[in-house]
Length: 445
Image (cartoon, rainbow, N blue to C red):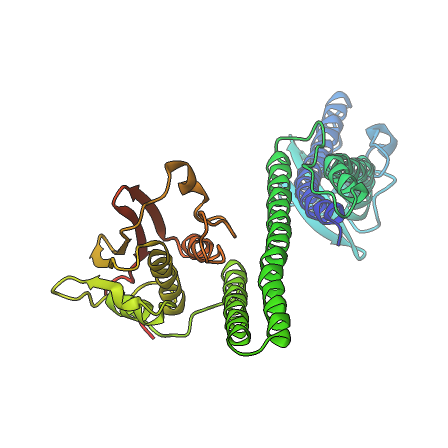
């Protein structure tokens, strides 16, 4: 169902209900006023007949039958009139009166059934006579029906006209939305430029801004993926070329040179393997895949697992410092990613610190967060280069890494609302990684 049809149905139904209630109220009031007017006509006719009788000579006190002509009463068409004495003697009847006399024993309005037809009558006592006027309910209802029919035609026309104007108005109100749709339809499939639609109403401006923000995020994502593809192709080409070269050397030589070439080829294969693993992990972290395996780890457990997974053979250089009273709270994030992030920081510190110097890892908890601080004793990083540390494939100097370790840490930080800070000094680089803790008493699987 289209939006125009939906809005028209909702508003049209509301219009019909409101108009129907208003028309029912108006018709009810009009019917009451009509019946009241007809009753007043009966009263006015009775009083008119009484005035005419007062102008006539006095009636005889005895005898039966008509004592004067009914034509003298001048009763309006469609009405019956009867004049009788207080003793019940009928003195006159109008030509419209039926054969049976009208009931006139009580003054005021009455409902009567004469010859199977319902009548409404009014009786007025004036002196020694009773004057009764009446009209049929059938004629009253016919008159009422004709009046209501005449009144309902304008109401129906106005209602249909309102529905037509409503349909047109809803269509005009949706014109800006149609212009947005047309602008999107006419764009090229690869176009991610912001959408510009002039003269949009205030209600559609947030929609346009959200659409442009979405296009901007899509553009940034595509650009990041293109850059990743290009950088990955370049990074993978280098170890593959080196492996191929060393294998060719090994094929052409014998003895120690051959063994050395094979060793270099194996190193290149290991580097290529590490790069592919890092690329796979980065893609999973930046994607929508879940890492939650139901395992909960405390900060100290994460630290010890990261030390065990450190890729360098000199991981014995890592010095772990934990508080005397261990923290029992678990991290509020998958343990696999927490270990991967801390391991990458340790690998980076081991790689850039002097071989004989230790790498310090300090763990403590504060304000619902686990604080991990990794410090090396290397030369540090220039202040201008700190902002490039988490960029993909960025390396400082002649680093042997693939340039993805800190980029993966940054992706984990962004996904799980962690904090990452770098502090470079002359005596080494300090990296602070803050991870949220699960609240005490929270359900743990």
